[in-house]
Length: 417
Ligand code: EPU
Image 1: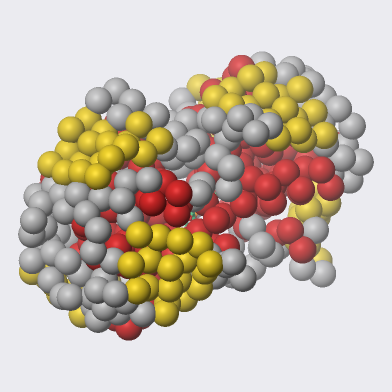
Image 2: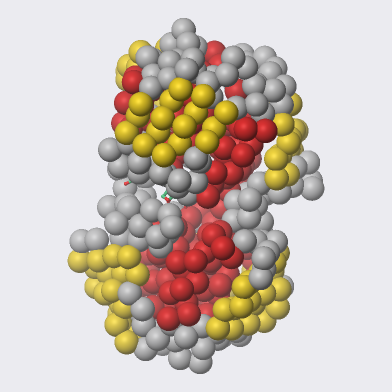
């Protein structure tokens, strides 16, 4: 199993090209199941989750050609199987995104229940409830969700709580349903809007995506389409924190800073100088960052996917930072690893109190999920001595060539295979 070795202390300086957003690319790949025509995707991040999704689609009978230039051509002209098996779903919860498209196009779908994961229970009850409201018969048996519907019917759906993949799943189900579906209390994450842009290009009639009410007028069939995946706002935010924590200066290109208003505001409060352009952003770290409180919320609030990275930064800030996690019940697994590196963090339910600044010392650490791993990389960049991060496959799920990108701006980081 690969590990990353980081020698801390280098001030990062230079430019990094941001990749396409994993969490926009996965639903876009799922959307290709809705049509017999080709779907072409550009700016696809070359990360492990994309490869896992490619295997999932191939298993369903789709032809997926991933190019070396961050493109993919997906042809689901014939669907041979309507089942997302346990083996794949257990490694990547986003596999559940095939449920809506398969049911809408084929009239049936069988998807392994994802179960819990390192950051919490993560049920899919709201996906199921919505599909039932659209007329589907849904059973859960032997660890699988089995759904059937001759043709889905438009419905008024009010989400009990905001769910990103739940919104994407029901939006994809609704595009081929008869009549109008209205999704209320929908996720307004930019990745949902990116998916709607692709679907509309394929002939869907979706209005309001990116807001909390989405209206979908069903059509009989969809055509093909070409789409460029939006930039990864979480990768961008992670590297902004890398500049902040090392007191360095990083320019991030091919991104969209308007999607990061909340973390950028927090960095400014911490004393980090941020200059934003249309498709680039530069962060210049302060010698002594100030402590700031963070509370995670759905978009446009502070993203839960940036919480772990800010906790690493809080260990270097002057004063006490209170970090509140509102989206997932168990997303502080990185705290205990940061404490092993010398951090002063007390976790109390959904709150973590971080006192800084402390001198972190390199250690062997182990991460349990993608963003937790990112926070350990950031801590390793400022720790004294060597940090070895185990289970790098978590990072590889969502960060493209992170060691090359950070190495290119002055970090001392290498992959041990
Ligand atoms: N929830 C339910 N029932 C449901 C669905 C969700 O109770 O049917 C709860 C969840 O347990 C959670 C909350 O609602 O407490 C929000 O979950 P959501 O469904 O929005 O999360 P997700 O769609 O499974 C996506 C991202 C995550 C990101 C969250 C929140 C993808 C593939 N994943 O997950 O990204 O943290 O939204 O923004 O888009 C990551 O990239 O590292 C990652 C975990």
